[in-house]
Length: 333
Image (cartoon, rainbow, N blue to C red):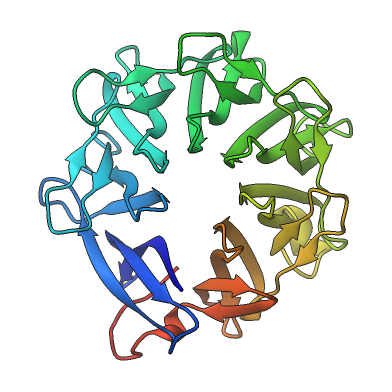
């Protein structure tokens, strides 16, 4: 059973070229490290999404001043990485790629506005997916059916809302909240289940909850939080409906009141109690993504309070760094 993840390399605490990890978890734990490089000979790139075929997208930092970042399709096979361009503006960022190679993220327009973008790999121009009437938007996930979700500002930039974007020229759909002001959608699975966070009626942005959004006009569902936390966010949902993210306490409250600030969380879409995925011996953890084998990846603190990348499955959290040669010089976050 082979699982593929995307991550980035850090040497001397500096972000360096992106890599992909091909991990055989159960048959003598080991995996190979592939340096995915960047664009144009620069040395900083970040992967943001990977599909079931092992294709990775993200962005390359072309200049230190934040101007010239480019959405990138990484080759992974020794070929040239592909600059995916922008919407005519300075920067572009690719966040998600589906099994057919559909890529979404956001890019800047000629007016300097970041807009949700469908990146076109071969021929044609990138597609501006628009907003909800406001200035900004970003696409965060595309499923194998081509459905795209993310966030967009409403008219007058009055609020930011979880959004189902149209790729056919139709209107974008505001997915609403839990009664509060703002929301954002981070992932959509092949069954059309959308997760992210939404503000509830207790405050505009001070009572965020991990949320399962309805795309058909039904009620959004509060996925809850761990008992010791204040707020929660869902970052990913598998095709089986497994939802992962984090329960957290804002730093200002953590400093005075709480025993921890962040904890990787497994949420239930059927009304079950959220599950604490634990740490690697330290205090905090965050779950970023999962796959259709219900394996979860993220980052967690060791007993030393340093952060390490992890894989979690069947109740067991394992450091990814512990599964490679300790003399390799690689550090995973």
